[in-house]
Image (cartoon, rainbow, N blue to C red; front, side, top):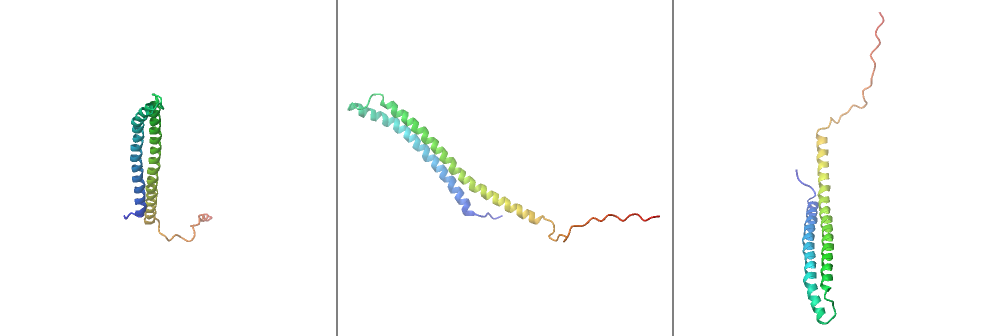
Length: 133
């Protein structure tokens, strides 16, 4: 049987692809935030100490901020991934419902009783009383 709504199937696939792209870019970005805070925080600490502006323990705050940023960005990425993927699956779910409904209607039409029904339902008439003897 020919599949209907080819454009909607394409749209559902595009949503799923966007979900995976979002997941990959988000995970790489969160790792980048973590690495930047680890390496950049140490460099900033050394730069600040040279001019007496930043205490020696400032790299700890940079690391803590990087870990918090990593976790927050990772959670947001996962939520976006799930939402986008769910939209793609919803499109496919609606298409499956339509296809199953159409198949059920065709099956009912093919296996239904004849279209000519009696005009009125049969009426019950009791048997005649026995004849007296």
